[in-house]
Length: 594
Image (cartoon, rainbow, N blue to C red; front, side, top):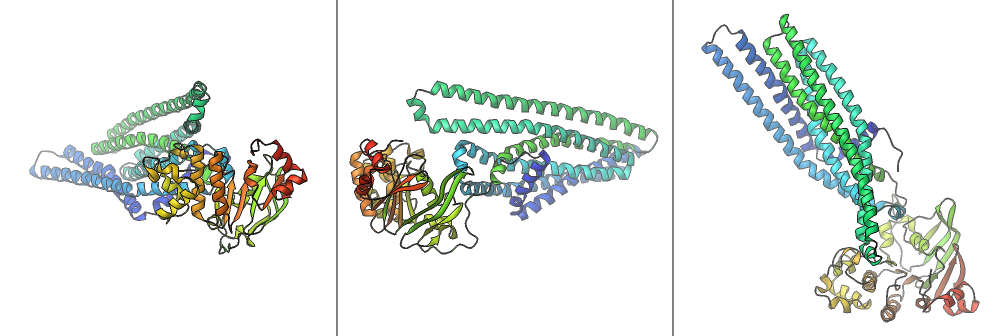
């Protein structure tokens, strides 16, 4: 994450980030600003001026005459008209913000979704899913609070203060200077106070993110909690985390109490001081009774608005604190990007080549160093090796989840960095070790890679993966919702759905990363037969611990420390009596342990 910046810098950065979202709907946004200004001037400036004239007319009238009453009724009518203008303008401004606000929130959440999916794999490895979701929701809600309090609150207060100073200066420069001095002092004190409180809000937000992440993690792994009888331990840990949230929240609320009391005291002091000053000015004949009423009316209006402004400033800084974590994420640069001018994919044969590839997760930790591997199109290759040998990294580099640091990975002679990531992955079917299923129907999960797949295509793929049998036995069949991460299915059933999805995709390159590890021996036999049919005329890479699945491979690559230690067919490697033979003899029922 980025180094902490001063509060004002962070706040300005966040506001400027959100501004283009409002400007997308500039028609409503411009009308909102205009109606807000007119509403403030009408209700907060013009109406008090008519009240001043009303009081002065009564105070200076020698007697009650029809002409006097007509003038007073006219003034009352104008007060009513301008009050109505104020109401209509504020209603119009609220209508405008109700139109562009939800659309902007929608755009922000859409962009956050896109940004998250562009982040490097390492980000998701070290970040809890629950905390990511919490940060995105707080980010969009933060925009809502910032927009509401800055636009509808602070903006109107600023217009009111400037207009008041100008009008009061016309009647009394002394009163105007008092308004200016008080306004500056008030803002300096409140800004300092809310800046101090922002640190408390940031601590609260971070504690809340940790609690949300832990909560989501516990719910996702609730079966593990039950199986190991660890609820009391998890509950105790969660209580400690929520206590930190409660403590941080208490400190934040105490800060609000101190600021509220300070605001009320300052406004009370200036109200009494202004009343005393206007009384003295009236005593020496510098102002009229109407001007006293005007000044006090403005004090009441601005005092109320400044109280609101204090609350709004606190809300603005609190919203900024809510947004800071997501802003840090947005500033992360994707490690893998598409070229500015991508080439057209030319993948017909599926020939894969790693050319002098160097890669390491850290500067002092190299996985591959000048690594080279050539896989002819249509060849079936098994990849084996101890944990940490580089098997998963090899697959990740081929899929461009990460980019090589030196050298190149090519398919049919085309550098995979020259085409878009979507174009590359559309030519590869991938079945991971852990089945990745959505909380959707079985049909949607199988057809995920092919938007226009027919019912016949889906059923055919399911039959090839030997999933059709158990699907048909379910009450809703292919419309069965599998639950989050496929929790309603067994491990083998989840794996077969994932395999069916890869079969339906029908890509020229097939990657099976421990794809049969969750299957029983009977299902594995059926799936192996299906793989044999699927692998015809396709480049197939199988990463496996269960070495019995590799016996029919054209070639087996044994990785050791990021290098190719052995290369050959199953029988050849056994005769060499090397690493592969050692792994084979140490496995149990064809399964290689870690």
